[in-house]
Image (cartoon, rainbow, N blue to C red):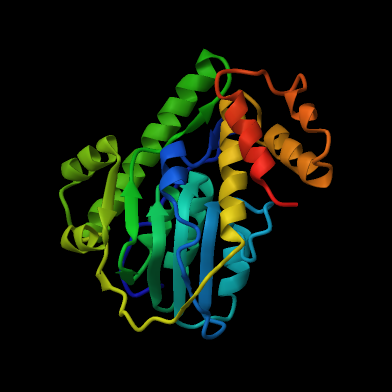
Length: 279
C-alpha cells in the first residue's frame, strides 16, 4: 500500500444523484494555469472534470483510466488541476491511489476542488504551487425521483460527507468537528493555508518546469455550458447530446432552443457560451 495509512472510502452508487462541479468552482477554475511538463511515464496528469470522459481530455479523470495507468508503475506523481465533478469517481480514484503499493506524490498545479480534493488526499506528499487552491465542501449534485428516492439520496450524501470529513481529519490531523464546519462553509485554502492546516505537506519548488495546456480553456467552456444546461433540468446525456450536435453542426443555432431546453432567465447565457466555442 502507499506509505501513509489512509482510510478507504466506501460509497454505494445511486442512479438518483448526478454529481457535477458547482458553478462557483467552475468559475474559480483556471484551466490555463501552466501544467507541469511530464518528465517520464510515472506522472499521472489529472486536468479537467472528475468523471468526464467525453470532452477530449488526454487522460480522463476516471477510475478506469487511472487503474490502467497504475498498472506496473512504481512511485507515482499525480498532477491535479480540477474544479471537481463526480464524487463517486473521485472516491474510486482515491481508493485506487491509496491501494497502489508505492509512494504517491500529489502536485496541485491549479485547483484541487471538491471531488478533486478527495483525490489529492491520497498523497503521501501533497505539494501545492504558488497561486493554487484546494476547496472542501459537502458533496453537491442534482437529485431526482420521488420522496423515497430523495430521502435515500440525502442519506447517501450524508454518508459521503461523513466519510470525506473522516478522511480530511485523518490527513490533516484536525478535529473532526472543525472539518465539518469547514465543509459546511465551503472552504477555499491557498497553498499557505493548506500547509498550515495540514491539508498539504509543502510547496512546489519554483524550479518545476511547466508548459501551457491550450485545450483546457475549451474544456472549461464545455463544462460551464453543460452545467448551465443541467440547471435547466436536462439530464447529463441530453446536455452532452446538445453539445455534440452543436459541435457537429453549429449553423442551426436556434436548434438549441428546441423542446429539450426550456428558455429561462439564463437562456441567453447558454447561447453566448455556445457561440463562443471554436469548432
